[in-house]
Image (cartoon, rainbow, N blue to C red):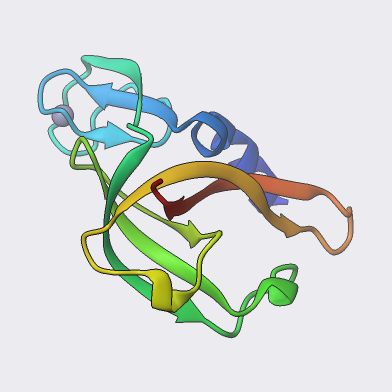
Length: 131
Ligand SMILES: [Zn+2]
């Protein structure tokens, strides 16, 4: 049962891009942390990632883990957010041929997967081309 636990811990991040940012070095953590993983500082504050960024890389996934196979193929994007943080998430509302390197993208909250046993529906952040 470690998967649901880690999912709930990440919930503020997957719904609102909330986490903690190191005041000393600026590194963003997608969880509420007491110590910075980059510089070891204990001076962290709650912060959010910006909602927009730049598409750096993407790949089309045709085989997925259980619960996500109905969504295949889907696009996984590596995005550099406006504050320099890097986030990996699915693309939505577009086809691979719509995507160009360095294009502007924005976050949306969408259904990610349905758990096979519990039928729980998991929501999370996806990216779409910015209007
Ligand atoms: Zn730091």
